Length: 61
Image (tube, helix red, strand yellow):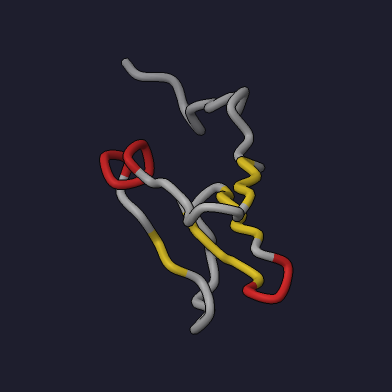
């Protein structure tokens, strides 16, 4: 997952892992993402797509 934030709005966003590098974004592993807390007075929005369908590009066999 990727964490971004806007200090002036006291807001943190959690998104699916970003495909492009951004110096203002921080990639987190699943363990650290689950344990993440934000400072008092801040709000966190989880914008991850939890219902992603993974389709193999070819059948096994």
